[in-house]
Length: 318
Image (cartoon, rainbow, N blue to C red; front, side):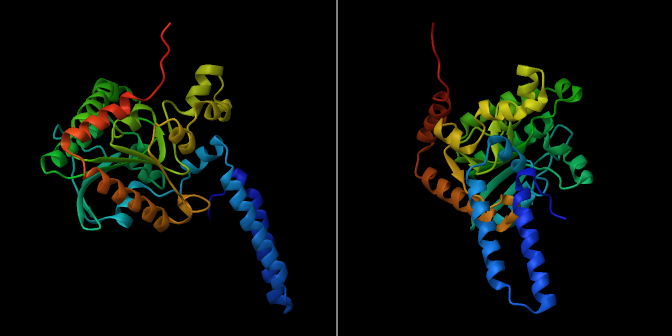
């Protein structure tokens, strides 16, 4: 049974009425096509209006939707000849970060992403999309491999944050992310990053230093989760909706602030309603970005990447 978000319930109520009318029409033999079409148009109009005016807290729910496409779904729908590359060469293969060689429309790329599960068993395997230091080191190994063989890099980001466990801290979580930030600046190949769901804190940024940073329409990108922010500011995680509003976590806000470069449209209702359409939209955005970036020299590519991130934020000196 499909998961229904709380703000979607009016749409479901209308759909239930449509289903009832269809059953009545079949059972009685009466022609109720006009009434059915009226309700269907009402449902469609309401849905369009609803999704055009979503609050940040509602986008948060869509970004975390259990049925939302995961990294491997996008790889299957966008790529050909994917070959996964395992391990950090120090003894562990963190399954929260998956990457490998692939082709997109025949163009060889290195594609790396954060994987979540669709059920409890998968979430345990992928650690709920929370990478450990070994995952970031694996990603760094793949970045360097791509750089050596002149392959563009695509990263797909969907994480509530890097794993906060004691073992992760003991094995250098902060250092692993920091090294990735430094080394991604130095890459001589085009890098495209897309926030596909959740983009939280350094866990997201560890794969996010790119020449083009994009977001799916109903994803979010933030320095801290709204619940974490509310817990700090108000000692009350239930005020996450207020925090989501204040943090400016949506693609439209971040596009306006210059944090991201592009918003990628999702099907009406969210990416989980049509995997193929979402993947096609992402693929078009990736190919367009790579075509533009391929025109730049290595020096220009690095210069623009560095300047892009240095220009973020506003400072007041007192």
